[in-house]
Amino acid sequence: MALRVYRNYDALSHAAAAEIVLQIKQNPISVLCLAAGETPRLTYNLLPEIADKEGVDFSRCRFVGLDEWLGIPDTNEGSCAWFLRENLFAPLNIAPRQINLFDGMTKDPAEECRRMSRRIVDCGGIDLMLVGIGLNGHIGFNEPGVSEDAHVHVTELDETTRSVGQKYFREATVLQRGITLGLRHLLESRKAFMMAAGAKKAGIIRLALEGSITTKVPASILRKHACGDVLLDSEAASMLTVI
Ligand code: F6R
Image 1 (cartoon, rainbow, N blue to C red):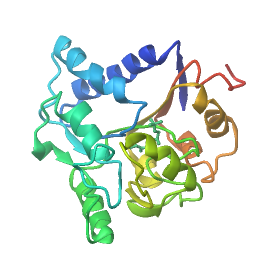
Image 2 (image 1 turned 180 degrees about the vertical axis):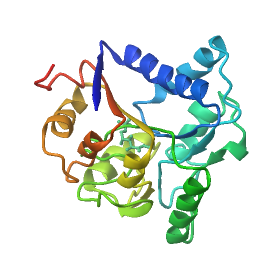
Image 3 (image 1 turned 90 degrees about the horizontal axis):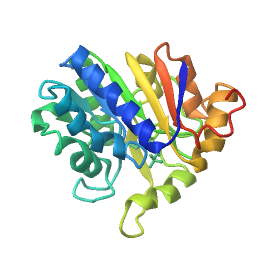
Image 4 (image 1 turned 90 degrees about the vertical axis):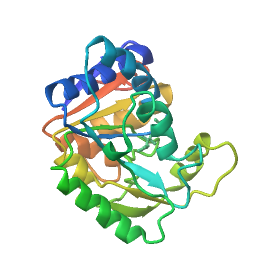
């Protein structure tokens, strides 16, 4: 695992956007799995301009969803699907055939898990995952105590995730369950980046990077990834003792 610390959120976002562009340059048919959430927002907003400048073509890559709130439709602004559509797919003119997201309104979550697992196998596995970290150490919706061997699964959301998740919604919303790729997908991906920004993430970043490698802090499992890098701004890195 390589750790890279940038002076601020802007520099961090430029670095993460450059990694995505590099991936597409090296392999235009890459399979990407990119998180929703506040952290990668600027990264995605920077992509069209960088892609344009570098002549990078996103028309052949494929996207698979990382996670979704169960019971929340993709027309809700708080859904991961909405976020990715607004911040990533629409600005980059990604065609619907390139996108495979979870259906948060599925009547059959178990089948939805199988469908996404099959999809990932059919497209040859994930080339690049870009994930964030929750205040409880989650990655995607892999909540503390999740199995390291889980692939796609449905999860009961942790209390922290339910309350912190309110920030994505216009009005108070019941968030009970999520559907997510598992830590096994993270470990099986060919390359993975975890991003974190801001002082509020400093404590959990320290636990994830300097505490034990344990599924009680799911993000710590990234340290087992042969090609898993951590990209931080200086505030998120401020409690690390190695810096
Ligand atoms: C979102 C996701 C979550 C977030 C995490 C951090 O698709 O998978 O695990 O990455 O909760 O969220 P932000 O970036 O909003 O702090």
